[in-house]
Image (cartoon, rainbow over all chains, first blue to last red; front, side):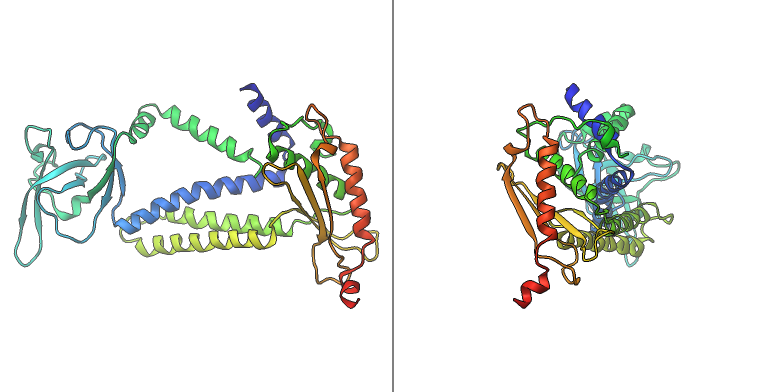
Length: 181
Length: 191
């Protein structure tokens, strides 16, 4: 362990300005490639947030806290039984629940949607904004089209303990800059 | 004085081929520069500029002020631009930089001197280090035929992992002399 630290320190001390710049650019390319992959996913799925983490147990046993959901918006009409992720005015965290009622108005294609968490006693009317009785298409961020169990726990932990996030970024940054490749 | 002159070179882990290559490459570059060939930064600069440009596309995509979905075209352009630039960068590196560890300008004091492209190879689990000196610009009038030195690294390292600086640099200097007195490419073609 101390060997790695002394190697890193030695590398940092003997690097010249130009090498710092080169390594900085490499680091920038790695970080920006992650950003670009995210943006591409956003474009491809049409959804604001193509990957979300399930934060509560309201959809058990289908989804548990810590699962990762892949979302796609698409142009298909929203139907009963689909699991959707939606935003409510006044709440900053989107909610993942199942559609239980859909009323479609003739000719205009306007939709009134009611959702409910599988594991909840009642439907979501109490969660909607003051005076709002139904969700509309514009509130829906996407439908769930796939999921990865447990992997999202990392995000939850990093959100509850933000210093872990910063520590991870610093360590990764130092490793990339000193990799001399 | 370069920082490397004040801090003694660290011993390498003799089982780590990548570290060995790195140390040899550094020493070889020093030997060539000390012989009077200043380092050329053209390729390195182009890489940096291209890299920064690519990153800026991604940053624009990330921080553009308007909200989804009106920014679809902007996002699309940025993403496509990023992929194109990244590919260009990789292709550029592949073409110009394949095994080269350093490019130099021609020597200032010699009349028919040429810039050097120093390439090295040390395959993953091998002990044969190959160093090739070639003209940086093969079309220049003073361009020379490339010279090669291939030898086992055991000749240059002590058992504890320290590089035998003097022995290695002497070998590189000898190779350099061989390169400087080699026939120019034109002479070889005319033969």
